[in-house]
Length: 144
Image (cartoon, rainbow, N blue to C red):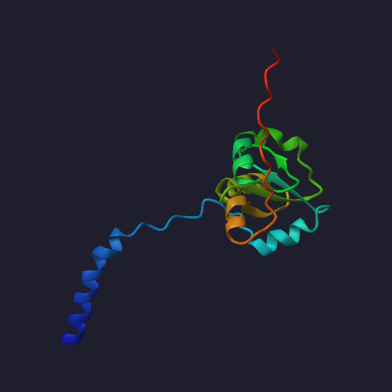
C-alpha cells in the first residue's frame, strides 16, 4: 500500500510539470519532408522532377536555392497551376519546409504527383551541398 501511495504521489508531482510543456501540435502538412539523401537522388533525375520554390526572391538570394526550379510564391500558386508541368513529379521548396508542405498539399489536391517538400536552409544545415548561392550584383550607376 505504501508503494502505491508513493507512486501515486510521484505521479501527482509530475502532473504540473507535464501540463507546463507545450502541447503537441498536429502536422501542418501531409507532405513528406525529404531528407538530404532523398532530395539528392531526385536532383540526379532532372528529367523526372520539377522543383517549385514558394519563397520570395529575397529569401532565395539570401539563403540560396537549387540550380533549376520554378519560382512561384505560395500566395500565387493556385492561380499558376495551369502552367505547372503535369508530366513530372514535384518537390516544393521553402526555407524550412513549412510553406513547401502547404504548397505540396495544395498541388496534391489538384492532382499533381508530389514527392514531398524540402527546406533549402534545413537541407544545407543537414549537410546538403546542392544549394546554390548567387551573389547579388551591385546596382548600376546612374547615367550622368
